[in-house]
Amino acid sequence: MHISSIRCSSIPFHFIICRRLRSFKRWMRSQRIDFSNALELIEEDDGISVRALCDLKEGDLVATIPKSSCLTIKTSVANEMIEEAGLDGSLGLSVALMYEKSLGCDSVWDGYLQLLPERESVPLVWSLEEVDSFLLGTELHKIVKEDRTLLYEDWKECILPLIESGPLKLNPNSFGVEQYFAAKTLVTSRSFEIDDYHGYGMVPLADLFNHKTGAENVHITSIASNSELGYDSDSDNDNDNECNNIDNEEPSSEDLGTGSSDHILSHLQPSTNSSNAIAGLDSLDANGVDSSLAAANDPMVLEMIVVKEVKEGDEDCAIKINEYKVQDNKLSSQIGKSLNHYDVAVAHLKVFNTYGLMGNAALLHRYGFTELDNPFDIVNIDLNLVEQWIMSSFSNRYFRSRLSLWRRLGCTGCISQSYEYFEISSDGEPQLDLLVLLYIIFLPDEAYQKLSNITISFVENVNKSINILLSTKNSRTSLPETPEKAKVLLLTERVRAALVSLADSRENFYGSNSLKDDMKALSRCCRMQEKKLYHSLVLRVSERMILKKLRSYASQRGKGKNREMKLEG
Image (tube, rainbow, N blue to C red; front, top):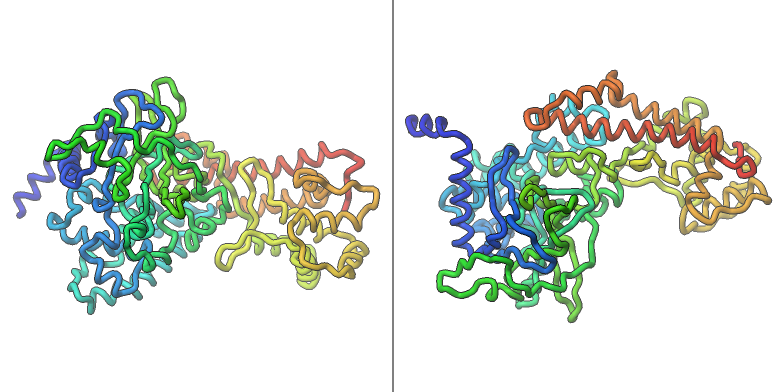
């Protein structure tokens, strides 16, 4: 045993990966996973890459993946134990993954699992020192710590009892809290929603494609859900959404306060070419049957189809994963998701999949990487921070009365668990509800009393609340027709000054290093050798640039306002 380990350690990592790749390809053949010979799996510096060796046309079927080859709660050997324990969603899938990994070469998925990293390098599994050092001030700093606490509670309440008294005599070394955290990172970053019966699962081959925000090139489709074939899907209807980023406002404990811009959005865009033969498919059927024809329209098979032409010379391409199900003879679409951080290329041209429209906080949180100049970045300003700033100049009673009026007008911040916050978009534009609150704070007493005496019924949207506000100010003022015009009217001198002060207060969260310091550190950082530091700096810089744009937004809007529209609080 000792000699063997010494020999293994002397083998270059490159050869270990090549061996695992060969094993994975053999495993795919055994599971009847077919992929086009136009695709090539290769090793690159940061993982496994998929390259396209020729142009791909829209409608080309480039891979088929039997659902039986996907690792799900239903297909795992631990299925009975997991379901008897009442575990589902990402928690149940994490237990299934841990169990299959504990079986080693006895697992049906051994050839696939050997290709996976032990864990994804996401902040959840960073040391506390790294979290406090790298993420200080960012949207993730507090959330990651909360995640660790919540996941430890999950392990203690749901997994520890299985170790102590479960029917399968689990090995504590394979089901400890560290192993659970590691499995959770893989499930969160790689799993897809397969269908109603299987729920979420690990989909081999499909998780070897890279991400580019807002771009899409390929769908993975399922002709029909298994429930239509007579399976009972009731038990899986309650799957939590941690696996797929379609969770109601990106993540419960994973909620980054990023609003809809940080969620994978549902694209109701069924492919019209799902029956096309696989482009250049290697026939892997042992009986000599053309597997490309056998897979077509098979409800038990996931199909990977090109929906945007890929050819040399294209600058941006991407891949999206969709799940199509036939219900009442109509196609409905649900996003499947979670492709991992790997590259795809046509010759020297990279082709990308997409997780959806996600900012860097969400990308780093779930997948362990960021994107420079991400147009979907945001920064949050907590209501508590706004309250602290206001109460530095006004009494608590004053603030509470103005806040009450704001809520009566139907306004609210974004909600995440026990937090309420306001979003600042990537261009530095503040959430409209924040402008309304600041406007109300600075209303003269006479205008405030006038509004307070009005019987205000339920206000449907913030635009109507703005009309109510402005109607008491100046009868000659034209009421805004659009949110953009409303913002111009709300940006009084005092509101603009408040925005600048709030930006400064939020900036203080990042510590003593300036934005310039962070930018210099980022320019010196090696992405490959210092991944954690690099992606943390990208997040810090992107957030601080947004705060800089917020200050500019407040200043420029003040200078450019039409004098006739200007309303001073």
